[in-house]
Length: 237
Image 1 (spheres, rainbow, N blue to C red):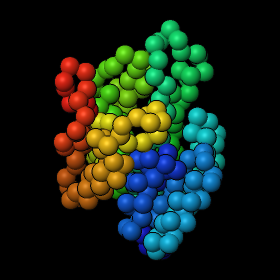
Image 2 (image 1 turned 30 degrees about the vertical axis):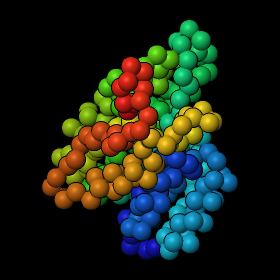
Image 3 (image 1 turned 90 degrees about the vertical axis):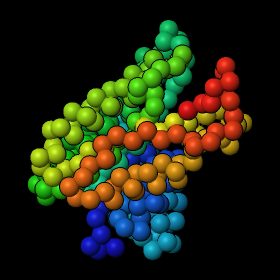
């Protein structure tokens, strides 16, 4: 819809990214970035049926050249860097391809997408970048050497960027969800106690709705009353 601000959402074909795209669609024109063409078409159809506008961008985020081609000329008011992958296994069992895929999608794509869209925000003197990290960005778990390392890096990247660009009118925030009921978990896993993707989307929308002169920089989001107990009787994240 003409006149609406543009929100670019990566990893928009499923899970948290899809929920964010749908949540922002009433107020933003969505540029939905992901590899899965069929899922992006489904998302675009749903947003169109709701009266919004969605431009699918089929991109392998592990390829900087593909990012540049897909987003060249896009003037974004909002960027949500959500795309992420996880391989959970002991470090010595990682293949180099598995390791580099996580680093490429979870961290390097964050740089390349932001590098593509940030200059336009600085020229406009406004914009908001929201990076989706994880509680794993400040903690660890066995089998998490790759995933946890990338999410720690996202936190460092985000805070440094926030300090660099806030004088240009550009806001930078990071959201750290706990366990969210998405495809990250094995089929058959009990996800009834977890956050829903829509819960995280609502948090992102709230961050974007802060007053012009206020910045919500870092938000940690957990399930408010998880019904499942983890090892040792402790409630999981």
